[in-house]
Image 1: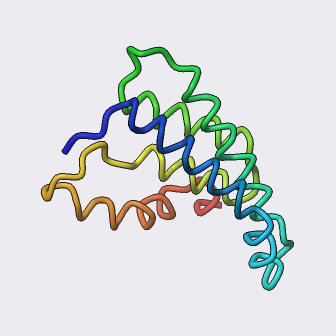
Image 2: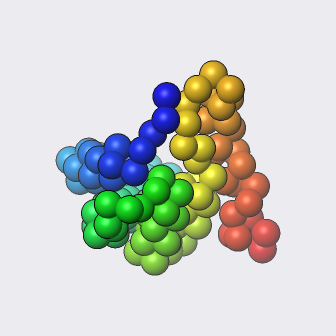
Length: 120
């Protein structure tokens, strides 16, 4: 199964909607161990990603969608979350065949290893 650009754009729109709906809950969870702003940061990042990918033309391929989302998310969200999510978006494979399914499980670990914040 191949994931096309239109599907990816839809996924980013759906995630932005879900994050907005759970923003306060995410902030409350973050407040237990942090500064209670995770829901706000995720809403900003996914709204920026959604808007940026929606502006791409029909000729955009999945890689362009993911790179555009990464750049938009990084520009909208600072701290450690911005680089982590942006790196993960750039590492996502665009196919979910059995040949690539293991890569989906490893992508978050790859993003952490490649994160600019991790290198400091």
